[in-house]
Amino acid sequence: MKMGDLVDQTKSRPSKPLVTPSATASVPQGLKWLLLDSKLLDGEHVLVVFEKRWLTEARQAYPGKVIYFPPEIEELKRVKDAPDTIKFLHRIKKEFGAWIVPSNRERSGR
Image (cartoon, rainbow, N blue to C red):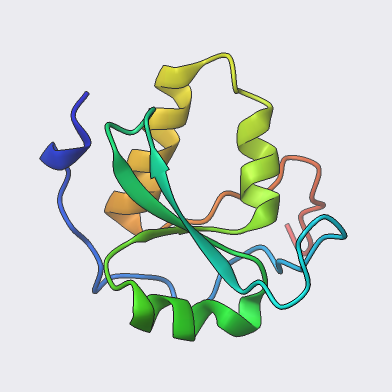
């Protein structure tokens, strides 16, 4: 699957992520985000934002990049041995402006 074949949906992002991300102890102090060059995604750059408060600034700095928060990265680690699954999830995020909700998160009100 070539990621370049996907439709750019940068204008149809959700207003806020479903996951409330927070900085982890392993994130160096003052780090807002990282821009990563993913070999798995054919060299596509993805943006990892460490706290929700930096989301708007990160989007302005790197418009059109698919954004991940630490809880989403943790969820992807669960399928790290299935590269096609990771590519599929990335495609869904990109096409629909979706967020990966951790499977251990309780669903309230449903």
